[in-house]
Amino acid sequence: MMTIEVKNVSKTIRRQPVIQHASLSMQSGRIYGLQGINGSGKTMLMRLISGLIVPTDGWILINGKLLGKDLAFPERMGLFLENPAFLDRYSGFHNLKMLSSIQNRIGDSQIRSALDQVGLDPFDHKHYRKFSLGMKQRLGIAAAIMEAPDLILLDEPTNSLDTDGIALVKKILAAERARGALILISCHDFSILQEMSDEIFVLESGQIQKHLHAPDFM
Amino acid sequence: MLCNTMKLELKKAICNPYFYLTLLIGLAITFFSLVPSLQSYDQDLRSHQQFAAEFGPRNPLMQMETLFNHWIGGESFTPGSGNYFFLFPLLATIPYGWSYCSESKSGYVKSMVIRAGKMPYYLAKYAALFVSGGLAVVTPLLFNFLLTAMFIPAVRPDPSYLTAYGIGPASFLSMLFYAHPFLYVFAYLLIDFLFCGLIACLCFTASILVKNRVVVVLLPFFLLLGVHYLCYSLLYTDPMVIYRQCSPMAFLNPVPTSYDTTWPIVLAWGIGLFLLTFASIVLRGRCHELKKTAVV
Image (cartoon, rainbow over all chains, first blue to last red; front, top):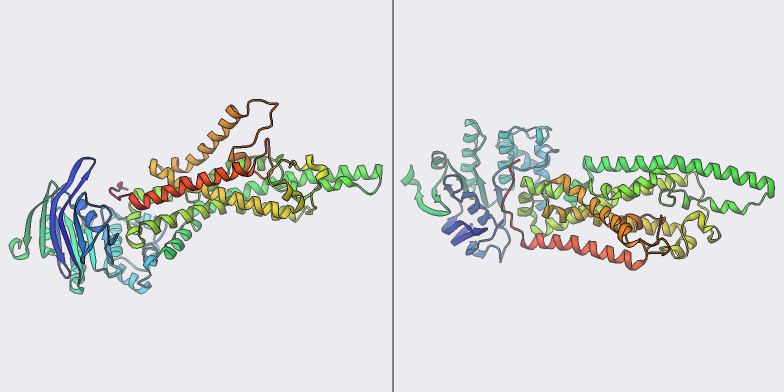
C-alpha cells in the first residue's frame, strides 16, 4: 500500500514560480490524472514527486517518509518523463536489460513480457536509433512498468501513439491499477484522461485549480 | 546497487565503437612507430659490427641498443612516438568522454538515477571514464612494448651510455631505469594510466559547463595544449637555464624530450586533477536537480 502526500509544495526556478502551493494526496490502486495546457506545471509536479527536483517550499511524503530527506527517490518507481531516452546502439530488449540490471529485480522473461505488453517484438534486434517515434514511446512505457513498480509516473504517455497504441496504454494502466500500483499520468487531452483516471487534478499556471472525482467528469 | 551500476557503466565504456576506434588508432600509431625503430636498430647493429670488425670482437657499444630505448616510450625519434605523446589526451577522451554530456542531454540520466541513486550513478560514471581513458592510452603502449620485445633484446641500460637513452641522472625515476628497467616501464605505464584516466574524467567536469559533446571531448586536449604552450612561451624563456618540466603533455612521455620533471610536479598535477574531477562528481551528486531535458 503506497500513499503520497504533497503538502503546500511550491517550486521556483530562476525566480519564476513554476508550482505554487500544490497539495494533493494519492494512494495505491488508483489512477490520477494531471490535466493542463502546455506550461501549466504538469511535468514539473511529476519531477517533484519523482524526487528529481526538490521543492522550494512545502514537502512531499511517500509512505510517511519525507522525500529529499528520508529518501532520495520513491522506492520501486517507474518513470516516463517527457521524451523516451535510451541508448541508440542497443535493441529495445538490451536497453531494458541494462536498466533492469541496476536493481536486478527481474529477469529476461519479465523484460520480454513488458515489451510484449506494449506491442513491441521482444526478439527484435533493431537498434533503438531505428525505432519510430511511436516505438520509442512504447519502449519508454515498457521501461516504466517492467519492474512492477508501486508508483508509476507517466508524462504524456499517449504522445506519438496511434489509436491502437492509446487503447494499449489504457489496457496496461487498467492492469497496473488492478495489480495495486499508484499511477499518475499527465495529459493535455482531457478526454483521454477522463477515460483512464479515477481522479483528475487540473493545473493552471502552476496551481491546482480543480480536483475532480470519477463520477463528476464522466 | 553501486556495484551493478559500476558494472553497467564499465560495460558501456569498454564495449562501445568509440573505444574500439580509439584503440585501433592507438594500436596503428604504435605499430607504425615500430618499423622505423627496428630499422634504426638494424642500422646501429650494422655500424657496431663494422666497429667490431675494425677494433676487435668485443664491442661494448652493443649495450646502447636495448628494448628500453627502442619501444615507443623509450625513443623520441620516430613520428609515431611524437604523434602518440601529442595526441594521447584525445585518445583518453574519445572512448567515453562524451557519455555524460550525451546522457544528460537525452534525459537517459533520469532512468539511471531513479534506479541507482544520484551518487552511485556519478561514481560509476567516474570509474568508467577513468578506466576507459587509462586503458585506451596504455593498451597500445603495452602492445608496442611487447611487440618491440619480440625483436630487440631487453639488455639492461648502462649509465655509461646515458646519452643513448635520453635519461640523465636528474631525470624522473632515473635510478629505476638503470637498476630495474622493467619496473621503470611498468611505473610509467601506471602513471600514464592514472593521468589518462584523470584526463578522461575532465570531460565530466567539462560537461557541467558545456553542452556540446564534441567540445567536451576536445576540451581536455586543448587545456593541456594550452598549459604546454604557456610553459614553453612564458616559463622556459632562458635557454641557459635547466628548468623542470611542468607540462603533462611532456612529462607523461617516459623519455624526457626537453626538461626533466620531478615527483612534486607529478604529484601536484595528479592531486589537482583528481580534486577537480572528483569535486565535480560530488557536487553533481549532491546538489544537481534534473530539471530539463533537451528534445532529441
